[in-house]
Amino acid sequence: MDFHRGVDLMARRSIIRAVLPGRICACGHDRFLGNFVRICHGKTESIYGHLSAVLVYPGKKVSAGDMIGISGHSGRATGEHLHFSVRSGGETVNPLKFLLSLQVILAKKQNHEKQRPTTAPVHSGNPGGDRSDR
Image (cartoon, rainbow, N blue to C red):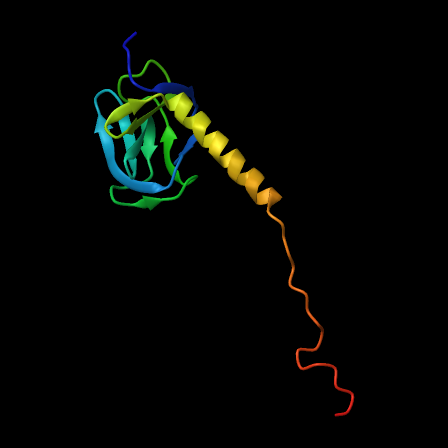
């Protein structure tokens, strides 16, 4: 087995979605990654490899959850799966820790939104007042 800087995730003809919003900075074919998509999120990049189909093009803006490809067996792969890797500031980041930190951030955000008090505006009824002398 060759070492690579990413994680292989089980996928079988699965729709692959962007993890974060960003811009497609590259996509195409690489001899190792096969069909791939690379998304730029500021100083961070996420890379999705071994796709059977790429559904985006360079320069396209994507939101978190947008479809970007379909998993496959392209490039140097022993079977169908998704290769996912992350680079930040030019350095490789552990993609599992990256995904876990995203999950923690989202959970905190959702918890914060649940705890935020909701105040409904109080209406006095008739905006012109209740005038019975008309």
